[in-house]
Structure formats: C-alpha cells, structure tokens
Image 1 (cartoon, rainbow, N blue to C red):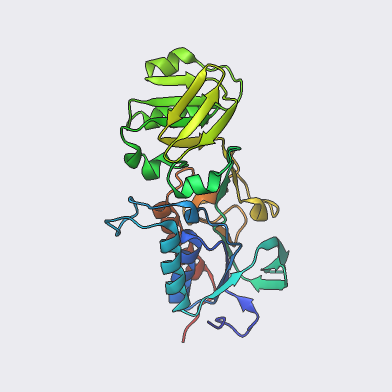
Image 2: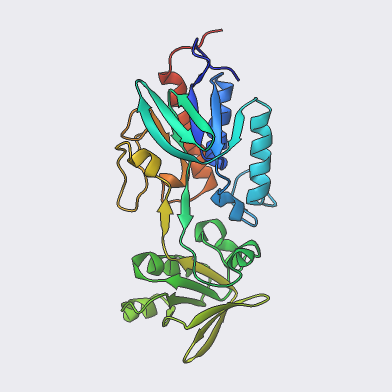
Length: 300
C-alpha cells in the first residue's frame, strides 16, 4: 500500500511486533487506507499458546500459531508489508521517526509498539516442549479453567507468585506454591488460603504427563506447573525516547493508547498486566483509529 502523501518513502505508521495486537492494528490502518508496515522479530508470546479457549469466536479453541497464521493471511490480503526483522532503535527525525533495523532504516509519521513481554523461564530441561504440551503454563486467566481439579504447582517467590497461587485456588483444591528461592513467606496466610508451601527444590524434572519438584524431603508431582518468576516488558524502544513506564516496565498510555511521547502508541502486553489476546486487539483498534484521525487527511 502506497503512502498517503507526496512523500513515497514515509510510512503513515510503522508497527513493531507481529503478534495479534500488531497485526490487528495494521489491518485497521490498511482499511483506513494508510500506509503501514509491520516489523516482526518472530518472538510473539502468542506462539506459545497450545490452544486458547477464551478468545471469542472459536468455540473449539484455537492455537496461538493458527491465530497468527490467520491474521497474517488477512494482513497480506491488504498488501501490508510484513517484514521479518528486529527494529533495533527508534530516533526522532524532524517531525518523523526513524526506525533502524538490520539492512536499513524506515521513516514514519507514527509508531505503534506491540512488542509484548518476555516471561522469565525456570531452568528446566525440556521447557519449550513442556509448554507446547500444556504441562507448563504462564497464564491462569487464559487456561485456569482447563487446570480445574488438577494438581497445580506455582513456581516463584514474592507477591506475584502468592497471588497467582491464590487465583488458581478457584480451580483446584490441590495448589502448592513451590519457592524458587529461600524467601520467607507468611505460611499462615497460605494455609488459610488452602495452599501448600514447598521449599526451593533441588531440581525440577519433566515426565511424560507431569512436572516433578525434587527436594530433600522427597518428590512432589504436579499435573500443571505455572512459573511466576516475572517478565520483561518490550518497552525500551519507546522509553529511550522518554516514554514513561510503570513500576513493572509497561508503557503508560492515555485513553487512545498513546504513550507520553506524541506519535508513539502501544498495544497489548507491553501496556497491560492483563495479558489477553482480546485486550491486545482492543488496544490495537483504539490506537489505529486515533492514529488515522490525527494524521493528515488522505482523501481520494
């Protein structure tokens, strides 16, 4: 799709991140007849989802990979440029932004970051395969329902791990918090919530249908294991230009998904603690519409 002005080398919007939020934003912008390119480093968190059953419109569920294929196909039908490259930096260039990536640069009037988060993973052999098999999961909001009445382990420390364990008590009576370090926690509070406490294991082992925590006192077997070790938000491209972040590194945005740097927008997990595809695509629709309205008119 050609740019909407007399500057053929300037995009209306450059989207960074080819997950559900980024591709949805690109679709909206293309349908507003704006020039848009999506740069994707190929690390969408959605790829890790074996099957989502809470994304609307798919009664039997859909895997993250399948959803991304469908969205990419839809984007391709609008001649959106899908570029497999990592954007290494953003810089001001007069009234524009310049994105640098391996192989070149791109000029754009606006930027939408859909760079998500990266979960901190436990050190356990076979981690990736266990995720694809559903033994290791990261989002109880997404799939706690599927863990109902199973033996659930939450692995981590601190408030985040405690809260995740308490959340999962809605689904099972058999929930244990497996400490990732020697932190001292309020055991009375955990007992009152019906949560067992297991001290930091010597190692974790993946079996055919379970995860095993190996401790001096013995072994504990879990059907589902939820790491709660924190995550890193992909906010650095914007924060280097002065965009403000909250205390966990997610970008602060206004009601239109615009960061504190005018012209830079953000959608999806890089903004919200509620890491849901539906939330990210909603952000994307809001951001793309505001971008379109604030750009120069593009009458045909």
